[in-house]
Every structure is written in C-alpha cells, then in structure tokens.
Image 1 (spheres, rainbow, N blue to C red):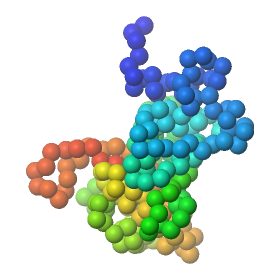
Image 2: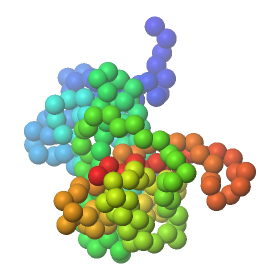
Image 3: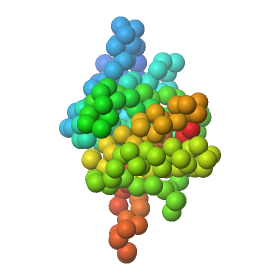
Image 4: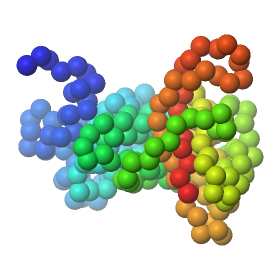
Length: 219
C-alpha cells in the first residue's frame, strides 16, 4: 500500500492501543486516565495535530475527552486549532461524533488568561458562517461581545463568532465564558463548536480569503 501522508497518520494513529509499539504520544491514554490524569497542558509551540490525535482517540473511546489547560493567547489559539482538527477527524468518520466545548477561566476573566477547555462528545451540529455572525478583533471588548452572544442566545437566535489570530481568539473565548455567566439565571448552558473556514474579511472590500476560526454557539 502507498505510504500514509502526515495528515492520515495523525488521523489514524489515535486508533492504536497502548500495546502498539508504534503508538504516537497521547494515543495510549487508558493508564493515564485510570490514574486520574486527564489534563493536557497546551503551550504556544504545541503542535495542534498531535493534540488533535489525542482528542480524537479519546473521542472514539468510552472515556472522557482530555481537558486542555492553557495560559495566554498563543496556547489558547493552539488549543482551538487542535479541537477544530479533531472535530473534523471525528465528523469524517462513521459514526459521526461532534465536539462541544466549555471554557472555564481559573481567575478573573478580565485580566486573566488561564483557561481550561472541557470537551464533550455530542451529536453532529451543522452550522456554517453567515453575514450575521459576530466577530472578535484584537481591540474588541469581550464584555460587549458577551452581551451580544447572551442576547441572541436568550432570543433563541443562532449566534456565532468568527475570528483569527491569537489575541482575537482569546477575546472570543473570554466572551463566550462571560456569556455563560450572563445567562446562568435563565437556566441556559452555553458551549461552542469550533471549525476552520476560509472567508474574506467583511471589513475589507475585495480582500482575499484566508482561514478563520468559526465558533458556533450552542445554548
């Protein structure tokens, strides 16, 4: 058979068991989970595909997905890329498995950037970017964005945030976490599903398409 590409290897390496001598780091998770260790720390230089393989492996198995622990915008951005890649892996398979994410900040959201991402398995969610999507930029006020997310969620409207770049991604994540606080009294639970999408910047007329992260909010 022809050799696997690096992407194919990343997609399927997670299927191997811990007894397989060729198993990639992160794929032999059974003993680690049995010891109560299901947190993966993400750094600014972490390879998202390696983490995606781990997430996908645990997504296929009868165990919880790993918690991703991040500090700062770069590591948060890498974590979002990893989840988006893992989500694509799992949605391309049968049965299809989707991933919903809850961000939990470990200190004050305004000034802090220590966040843990709780990833849960779900039925497939089909959401694509629209002209009504919200956006997060480097200077975006996370509190105002959170208010917009919460308002649409309360009204039963579809809501999503499209962004790119490490700091804007952190702003979007903070806004989603804040929106969850805003709707607590409404007995709502806000999560998101993240994916890559090639889009033109709506604020720059005639701009070429580039890759954005699209956060579909699920409430």
